[in-house]
Picture 1 (tube, rainbow, N blue to C red):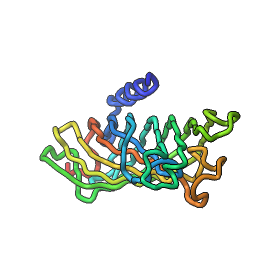
Picture 2 (cartoon, rainbow, N blue to C red):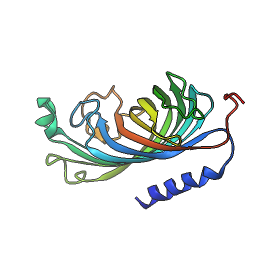
Picture 3 (cartoon, one colour):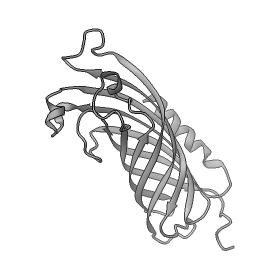
Picture 4 (spheres, rainbow, N blue to C red):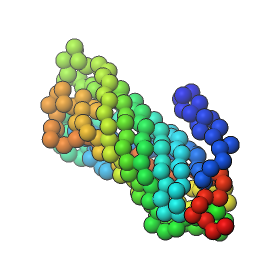
Length: 224
């Protein structure tokens, strides 16, 4: 938690930079995991997610974005509506950290130097790197494996949709949901136990709100 707050303070320290317009802010929401254990809902946040993000608006239609997210993730077969899972009884607890870079595209012009109210849907994608410490437990597991904590590092492809509006001339509020398709089927340890469909990779989802502060000189895409 201390590392997260240090990161937020570091991001706000960039406010003195004078260049094309920037955004810096925070993410608050929830997370859920989609894989071989627990429920199969696509958006069903059950754990707190905190994040920090930075955007560099290159035009009223697109921006480069960098984000950091951290969350605990839990899943339990007993919560699944599928009898094959609920009868199995596995559960995982995961501590996940993610750094993501990518491009955000606005469906409507979102010129931040025009102080009039604006609203636009947007999509974003790019590439994420994450590492997760997970613990897989079950009463049926052997004593040598039960409760063992493992670490998994991999990359993922984020697919984010949202809608945002400038609530003041300097602050932008957004609601977004972002699914991450990972390039591994083992962020939960299921591969070691031959659980589920071994041909399907794991997913995780962050959904919540962002609040960003805008600053910087008038960019080149504005009229002089």
